[in-house]
View (cartoon, rainbow, N blue to C red):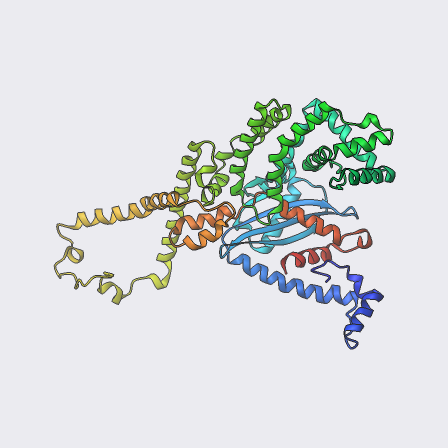
Amino acid sequence: MIVKDLQPLSIVEDQGFQGFVRALDPKYKLPGRKKLTETHLVNMYDECKGKVKSSLQDVNSVVLTTDMWTSVSTEAYLTVTCHVIENWQMREFVLETHVFHGQHTADNISLELRRITEEWGITEKVVAVVTDNAANMVAAVHKAGWRHHPCFAHTLNLVVKDSLKNVPEMVKVLEKCSAIVSFFHHSSKATEKLRDIQKQLKIAEHKLIQSVETRWNSVFYMLERLYEQNEAVTTALCLLGKNALCLNVGELSFIKQTVDTLQPFEEVTRDISAAKHVSVSKVIPLVSLIHRSVAACERQGSPLATQLAQQCQRRFRGIESIHCLAASTFLDVRFKHLGFRDKDNVEVMKKRLCAEMQEVCQTAESAFTLTPSSMPTASSTSVPSTSGSNQGPAPSGSAATKGGIWTDFDKQVLSSQHHRSASTDVLIEVRRYSEEKLIPRDKDPLLWWQEHEQTFPALSKLAVRYLGIVASSVPAERIFSKAGEVVSKKRSRLKGKTVNMLLFLNKNL
C-alpha cells in the first residue's frame, strides 16, 4: 500500500488501520514507522535496484527523459527516467528522483545527470536525452556529451501559446471567456442557475472549464465547452443581470473558427500525452499532418491559422533533416517514407543509414573473428564446408592449395565477396525492407521487428536504437504528479532519500 498506492508511512500508526489489521489477523504485529523506513523500504529498494541494473546491463542503447520540479516544501528535485527496448518490448524505469541543491545552471544539472548515469553504468549507452526547451536543460545535455531531443508536446505548447498571443482579437475573446467561467466558478448561485437551465433545455450538464496558463489545451477545452453551452450560459447570465458578459454572434463565430483550427493540435497533444510509450517516429508524420491542416484553415481566412503556420515553420524547420527523427520514422513500418514531405530527405537519411549498417556488420564480423570458438581448428580447415553438396576433397594440385595461374583470380573473387558484404548487402537489405507492406497504424512496430529480426539483421539493430527514442518528456513529468502525492502538506518533512525510494519502487516494482 505504501509503495503501490503511495499511502503515508504513518499509516502503520493510524488507529483505524491498526484495528483493520487486527481484525484480519490478531496475531500479526505491524512494524513501526522507523523500521518500515530504515529496514523494509531499504531492502525492497536494493532488491529492485539490482533487477533494474541487470536489465540495463543487457541493452546497448538507452534514452533518458529528465525534468525538474519543486515540492510543497520548496525543495527542488531532479527526476530521470530511462527507456530501453528489451526483447522487442519498450520498458521504462525511474532511475532517480534527487533533491537538487544549488543553482539550476547547466553545469550543475550536467554534473548530476552524469553522476546518475555513472552510478547505473549507462553513460556510454545514452543515445539521446529528451527534455523541455528550457535553455539550462538543453545546455546541460550537450555539456554531458549526449544528443538532445526537445519534448514534442512542449514544443507544440509553445507553438500554440505564441500564436494565441499574436492575434489581438483572440486576446480579447479569451479574457472575456475567462471572466465568464470565473463568474460561474465563484458563485454558487450562478452555478445552480446554470444547472437548472441545462435541465430545462435538456442538454448535457457539463461544468465550464477554466484555462490554465501552462497548458494551451486548457484554452481549447474552455472555448469548446463555452460554445457547446452557449445557450444555457447566455440565458443564465441574462437572468442574473450579467448581460455584459454574454458572447455576441461575432465572438461566437470567432470561437467556432478557433476551435476548428486548434482541433488537430488537441488531437496530437492527446495522442502524445495519453500513450504509455510514444516513439519519436511519430513526430515527422504528425508535423506533416499539422502543416496540411493549418494550410487548409489558413485558406478559410483564419488569422490564428496564419500565426500557427508561421510558428510551425519556425519551430519545425528542417525537422526531416534531423537524422534520428528521420531514421526512426523510416524504421517504423507503419510510416517508412510516407511520413515525409520532402522525399530528398529520405534519400539522404537512407545513405547515412546504410553507412551505419556497414559499421554494425563490421563490428559483428570483428566480434566473430575475435571469439575463440570461431577460430579455425585443424579438423575444420582440412575439409572444406560445402553445405548441401556431395563434392569430394579438392584435388591435390588445386590452386587453392598451391597457388598457380588462378591465384590472382581467386584474390579478386575474395575481394569482390568482401566488397559485397560491406556495402551491397546493406543496400539490398534496405531495398527489401522498403518493399515490405506497411502495417496498420494501430499495430505495434516492435512486434513486427520481432518477427522479422532474422530477415533484416542489420536494420533490426538500428531499429532498437532509433525506435527506443521517446517523443516527449511526459514520462518524467508524470513522476511529478506522483511526487505531489508523496510530498504533500501532510508529509512535507519526508527526507529526499525516502522520496526517491518511494517513487522508484512505485514505478519499477
